[in-house]
Length: 266
Image (cartoon, rainbow, N blue to C red; front, side, top):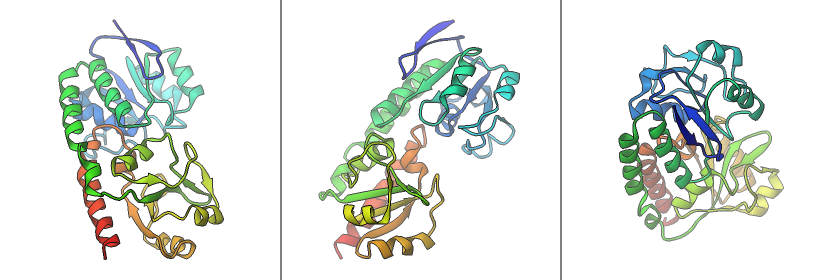
């Protein structure tokens, strides 16, 4: 057995090279496969959708907020990987009484990279994790230089009520990587009404494809609130998944930046 410290500074005793892993976090499920230990994953949530072909036969243990504790006990994991924000505290505490539970806490790229490195150590793939983080660091370098102007942005994650990604979120940090400035000064996920949206008056509104599935039809609704604002749908996974999906994020962000630059230079 080895003792690890998770991102909540908790000591977690884990068997060397765990063979029965349950992941309660979609982005960390994908990471486990990319690190090469997918065959050891015995349980995932219904929201764990990548890698698509490889997760089909793995037991589903419910959602991130309503996972089935009895099902998890039945699967008898030797490691559970969870997240402070995505999973509910009471359920995690019940699991922690029976199994090793390693909890991540992500609010920026730095904490995401640390999570990848630590998970790599947990599952016996430190070199693979090191290589991934090195590549991600290289990919994100220089991203800010594409746009010299710092556009004011609101990033919407929900409708009815309107909810945005505020400060102290991973999404906010990704926006900062693009040299964008969050129009909101509030932390976490504030709720706004139409008057508050008008007051903040962002140059750009980004409508996420998840968790609320914004579609093209919603653009007109926001255009009625702010007719002079540039509005578009964006891939929520590439703004909020903090595991190995980040390999796809930089190219997407570069393309998005180029589109925005073209729009404002018309």
